Image (cartoon, rainbow, N blue to C red; front, side):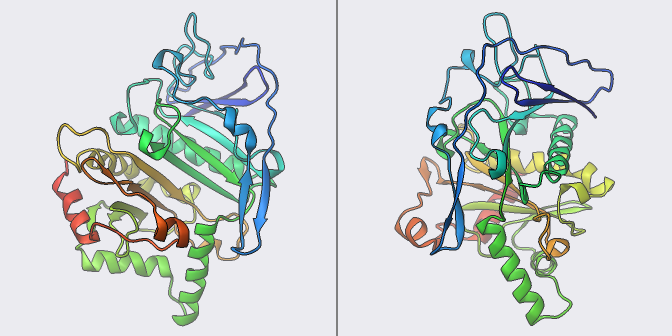
Length: 347
């Protein structure tokens, strides 16, 4: 992998990731951009014990532009974009409308391919492996920033999720705090170790699912994917490396090499869940990594959580009173039925 770092016209960092070492990336961003002005602020909720990012400048962010005005496509005559090059493999840049910035963290955009009409599932294994390398590299780089406590690599796909740009892309958040969901996992991890000295909660969950087998949907030599026993979403899959590691940087070569094929298979199955002729399945794909400075960092398990808000053809799982008001989920699909369906649509 070759990484080339440059700057956009307003000073934001842009990085190209290429498979060929000899690739030259010297295109210049010639747009007349003014420096980015952000108003990101972290506020602590004393009742819930968590934090909220207030980022009012995001109200002006680009919203569902036509394909010929896409800011993530390569630059071409008559259309200058966030990517000055005429083509690219993977590109990462600082978000012009970040939720987190400066002392409040960092937000980056990851463009998976220059093909506007593609999706992650359309990538080759080599292309997917390059995205994994980019995620890993950004995790390592953001870990060096004093303001960042945790790195979250994720993809929102589909208008139903709230995506504002149709180009295949994801994001990377460098949070200045440990997120509420991770805090809950760490609390459960500590409680399990106290109840069962010498045991690790993540290891025990993975072992239980592998032994049961009913919810396992895909297994490789180094990874296993399953619908969790208490899945919150109608179709939800968790993907774990069999050797527990805290983050993407810690994967060994064998696990790293196997990941692209398994991940692509999961995404392609998600697009087949609801049958032929249906629109692409909206989903959130979220990499959970250990906080950098937490005492339980070594006990945390890197894993992917992939889920869709679609519960059946033409119907969405809406977070209504119980879920939104109380955080108490009610699932319309049994995890065992969901696992069976995801196995049925295997390639």
